[in-house]
Amino acid sequence: MTVPKFALSENSEAAVGKSRAEVIVLGTVQAGGQAELAPGAEAVDAAFEGKLAEVLRTLGATGKAEEIVKLPTLGKLNAGVVLAVGLGKAGESGEITAEQVRRAAGAAARSLTGTDRAFSTLSAVDLQAAVEGTALGAYSFTEYKSEPGDAAVSKVDFASPAEGTARDHKATLKAATSIAEAVIIARDLINTPPNDLFPASFADRAKKLAEQNGLEFEVLDEKALKRKGYGGILGVGGGSARQPRLVRLAYRGAKPVKKIALVGKGITFDSGGISIKPAANMDHMTSDMSGAAGVLASVVLAAKLKYPLEVIAHIPLAENLPSGTSYRPGDVLSMYGGKTVEVLNTDAEGRLVLADAMVRAAEDDPDYLIETSTLTGAQVVALGNRTAGIMGSDDFRDRVAEIARATGEGGWAMPLPEELRADLDSRLADLANVTGHRWGGMLAAGIFLREFVADELPWVHIDIAGPSFNTSGPWGYTGKGGTGVPVRTIAAVLADIAANG
Ligand code: BES
Ligand code: MN
Ligand code: ZN
Image 1 (cartoon, rainbow, N blue to C red):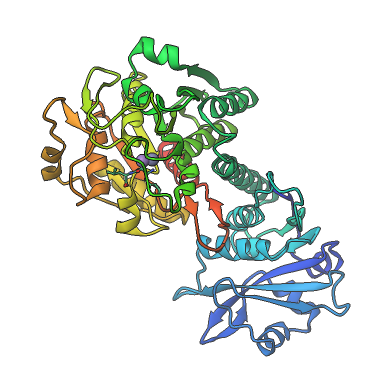
Image 2 (image 1 turned 30 degrees about the horizontal axis):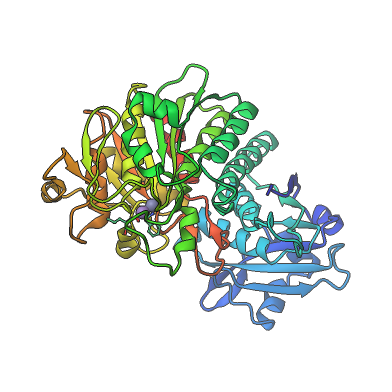
């Protein structure tokens, strides 16, 4: 899937009146239980002699978040319909957050299916958020439908904000479009079913993206993995006829200020292996490569936005299946770098492939390590479906958690309690892959990973088990299926490191 065609427009009465769009989108805010027009809607309101808010209220508009009210223009504008979307309540001094705009733009885009061209004034409030929300809300994955159904809106003109130069606006439009495109790269990968997306085919797609974006590319197949001693990836991937891979993509910006390693969990399907999962909802485990999709999209985005950084992504890819060649509970794996791990549960496979990749990633001598994975059901128990669990070294963890919330993706800093480490002791090996109890499962997984992080390397582990895949209804700019979380968080962390070191 691609984003609609976007352009910038003036936000004058003349421009709105003559717009060739079929639908004009504007925002409403909730003020004392009734709708008021959001900033940016003035030119549209003028065509209604200043009575637009009153008309919308008569139609029941309250301005609450994501509320949609449509109104025929009856010849007052060239466009046939005004679509008012709720932003929710404004802050104390009237401020509207980027995430309010992003969600409203997403909700509006979802109700624009079947429309060819729209004009949005939400961009007058926040251009970047309006573009991202529109692009992501318009997304749907129809690759496997014989009849694609109503098409998403194909062109959107964005009213320029009052502040800033045309040049700034153009740059913002371009950056926001690139960010949305990266999220969509991740969503497309997550939504591709596991019979078509397996370790080798994921690696092929990564290679194509690397070629298109001038990234260095390397892939290790099962023979190379064996030769180099990647026991974690080989152990987990051994049960599938479709053998594992380790992909490396590198972007080097001009005069890079820092080097960042990205690692993403790429289990193309997680049945649990011999420690097999229950049948109910096992199909959700098609999304167990969301971390891999996220870091692949992020390194591509770093190149598109030309960050002054070196970004190196390592993506371990394996399919976790039960078979005569599977690894078993009781096995001891010899990991990349030499540590040994006793496997007590083959369903705790993510940490095994990640450990190998993280040790390899540290060999490039990065300044920061960002790892993300659909690692534990315990993340969903602790934080729900929309809030990632963020662990790692204290300062970097807190920095990433704050940025995650600022992007609207959400995330919360979580501890790595020292007492859990002893519960990973193994009778046979250096470490066991599970604790043998359920308590603090998200944190125990983080503590396992910490054993494979190079000394002194600032690192963060982002558990996206819940937020990566939307199994309920659409909301804001998030449809069903792959969400693309945490691409926007990683992008914002990279931008922050580029600016502040
Ligand atoms: N991929 C799963 C985690 C998961 C669960 C992601 C639900 C998304 C939604 C992971 O490999 C897994 O199976 N983890 C186990 C760990 C346990 C065996 C210690 C889990 O969470 O049950
Ligand atoms: Mn598992
Ligand atoms: Zn898994």
